[in-house]
Image (cartoon, rainbow, N blue to C red):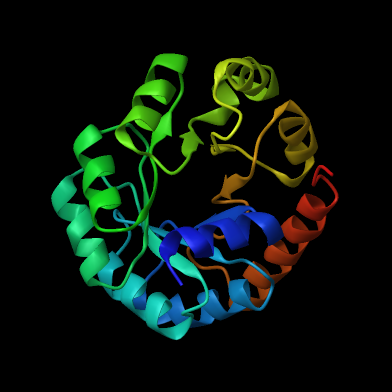
Length: 212
């Protein structure tokens, strides 16, 4: 199964990306298990976390059905590092054409960060799999709706930044295809049980927003 196949399958079932900023290698398996057993299939370890490649390697090898990768990826060299660790997903807070092209060249799913129509169209032209709309709280659902009106219908838009359970319906109605969820799901120091509780709450809320 390719990375893109995993991504498409996850979007159909649980279009939520877990952003595990601050995750340490020693807790990677337990937190990953809490997420996967809750139905989450998209997992991102930001590269400004402690020893992120070790965590990515643990998650990728332990949960082969999930799409695991790195976040806050700013350079093409980091794309290669994530791939070497077994990751298949590249997420960034910004749009860097070299990062996108390297990820696509390596057969990885790439979600660069964009905020404007100019950035969004440039990222799609570079081959981005989808668009991380970041920081989403700056434009809200109204901004998502405005961007969706001009973007290609097949373009995938995932708002990230300040997304809580109560926010998802408005964003979905505006045209969001999924979400990245960070501190509302996981913070360093949380137990696997706490993360699982959060994960199940988000899954239930997201299921209620899925458009027919």
